Length: 207
Image 1 (cartoon, rainbow, N blue to C red):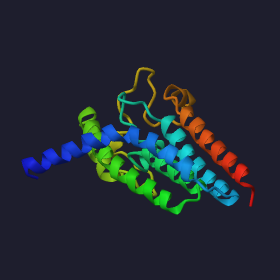
Image 2: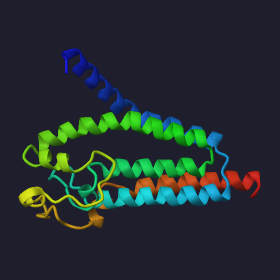
Image 3: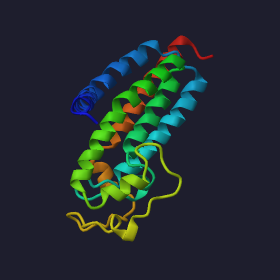
Image 4: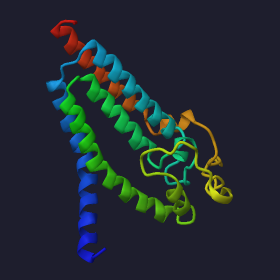
């Protein structure tokens, strides 16, 4: 890659990292304005959103950020289960609004913004865990999950240096980690949006 091309790539990733949060704040009000929810869309979209929340919760309860390379749980299937969970969760909320073009808009914007962010974070992870991340990234997809769980070669990734509490990287879900990462805020946000959509449906008259 040329120097100019590398510079453009870096600028794109920095831009994606800056706009990802503001984009969410813009999309939510737009969703609530254009939404035309039905009972079916609320139930179907709500179930999809809940599955995304479950993936995020599982990932959050396994992650020891910057302490060790996490390769168990959902991280054995995708390198970015939190982003995957957010994508599914957001798609479910968009489905709940029963506005097809908004579903497509959300999915397109999410991928355009977050794929560069994932690549940028992959470089950071490679710097943090130079001995293990190379093998891990070759075997585990960036976002779309593999069906079979990843097994670190020779157990290197699975036996990474223990964190401050001496936990192994092969550990199961830890509710304390879930609370530490304040993942419950995502559940509160989804619930709030679904409540507003339900209220909008009620005011419009149940079908």
